[in-house]
Amino acid sequence: MKRGKKSEEADAHPDSGTASRSKTKKTKEPEAPILYEDPPDKMTSRDGRDANTKITSWNVDGLRAWVKKKGLDWVREENPDVLCLQETKCAEKSLPADITSMPEYPYKYWAGSDDKEGYSGVAMLCKTEPVKVTYGIGKEEHDKEGRVITAEFPGFFLVTAYVPNSGRGLVRLDYRKTWDADFRTYLSELDVQKPVVLCGDLNVAHQEIDLKNPKGNKKNAGFTAEEREGFGQLLEAGFVDSFRELYPEQSHAYSFWTYMMNARDKNVGWRLDYFVLSSSLLPGLCDSKIRNQVKGSDHCPITLHMAV
Image (cartoon, rainbow, N blue to C red; front, side):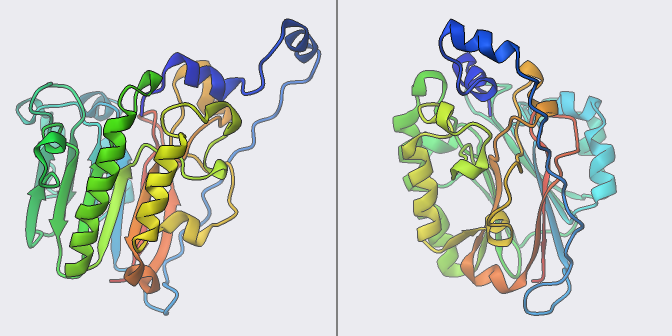
């Protein structure tokens, strides 16, 4: 997710106001950041099964730069069964050999923007071959931007998505509302066939607990009432935010920080990256992780452990 200047200022200074007020602030001690510590992974589901499926999702903010920053070294350590990437910003012909030749993931799938090279883009790398792989959601107005890959596995569909940003000044908010409705329909139609795991940068902080400065961002992309309502409607359609299911009260757990104003060190962030599951998969949910110590992008990776 990219934030406009107004949004970044709101993240850093949610209560900035008059000059006299800021003068008072100078005499105060700087506020110590409240950090989030990713707890040890839970490897057993609620119904007592051991985790046997591990999926990692990461908005890499430019695949080629991320590879140069040694992102693949961390992937090899994490060793997921499936790796989903968003905002790759890379045409298939320009993919670095470091990733296209990875023997650990013999099945690799790429989607990019038809119109703008270096824009948007998602990828999925799998250890085992999916039953079937499709691209987009079946609507040309959305699919030309290369935002969705769906892989069918024996027990579930895996959908990775880079949801459109409403943009600076909310110039794409109307489009985003259309996307949300069409995407929800697409996921619901899949869910009729078999359960769904949705992962990726969904470009929304659903609740106030999901970002550092909710008051200052209510009119900014990612935290408008319309976007939050769209996510809520997805949950009402039979899906579950896996992190909030397991950690309903956990605050200060973010997956995105602007590069400006030292936001990451201060943990002034947003939770924009999700694993959303069909409710029928909940008995097999083991853990939903935010790997917030991992660098290489303005987003950190997230990982799901499931018993399928």
